[in-house]
Image (cartoon, rainbow over all chains, first blue to last red; front, side):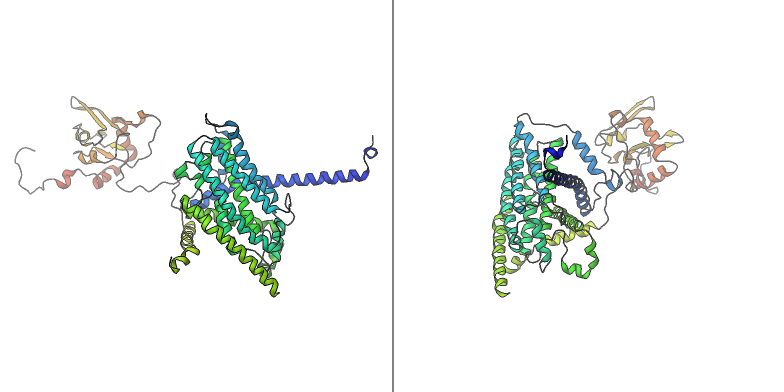
Length: 352
Length: 174
């Protein structure tokens, strides 16, 4: 039986086109996940090396040349370790928590534009979507702390939810200036608007927002100096104290993917994503032949290095100081930045 | 809040100074010694595992028990029968490597060698018998090294603080 008799040729064409689209999206997902997970593995290696050298040590050296295979050794070790669940834990919630945490972080990778035409889902509310999923990730942390039935984990979970909620406000407000300048929530549009602006990247006109964002991003991913939810010297390991083996690895993975995400968001909103500022291209015209994804990745790496640099330098804040920074400094400063941005925008409109 | 303090706060100047320091340290040479591949240089006079020194293939030790007496952790036990040292045992796990035994020994019979790599899974390996201690001397203090080491660092007290030869002293038999 000929297929053409059952469905019309136009429908077949549409179906084929749909199939190809789905295949392309699947391919993109596979690429992003594979590259993303590899980056997580080597982010840990890079972190240990950078912090090691900053502390005048060497970092991992024994597995492979200069310890290059260390991430795989760690991964294999984590995979084969015994999975311990506390007897009094709420088992179902205990199982679900790391999955929620990691899934919420991983979903965000789908809206990140890595290059001019490389984004899995080019949705118009990309920025809001990222905030929403970052908020969902807190549930993973909080219920893991609750389900472990341990004081340390519970304290870590409480602290984490308080921290992420307070700093998400500051982060959201710091990005409002960017939204106002770009006039869009679509991440690709924000990058394009940046490439066409006078400064080339929003980090220069929006430097107040940039500073607020960087501080809030460190707090949002629970990194030192804002690592109160997992403060080793106070709470053992915080919310994942009771987790071991692969479930611990899921938390670890989620945390690093969240870091990649925050670095990407910083790159997209403030550093110009895959574009280079026009004045750089004017001085070095040959740089325009380099694919945009290289610039994107380099900017992300630079932000990663900043994460590690901060971690090697600044000690942990006390809890009340930390909350005071969020509520009394960052949020008012971010609101002031919004007002200033709006004012400048109106004045420029009147003048020009 | 003074103006200076305000400027200091909003420019993060102290944090930036700290970050400059960590960045400078990143490009300085690491102090790590990668142990099994490279080893720390042992300072002369290092107090490591014990050895019983020999003269003419025989132990200098006469079993007087001064080392066992002075030992603060009492890890040396000596048995003497018919003028012969039958047992000379050091418990390495109890030893604190103070070197008192070496200083106390009037014959220079015991010394501390430069060997520090003798960790073991069982306690028996860390009980030093007379035979093991004697073989340590050959192993870690070969040739004249032992004598030199001994002269330089582990002279018995009597050599430095003894009665000078010209001084008048008790005329009895010495």
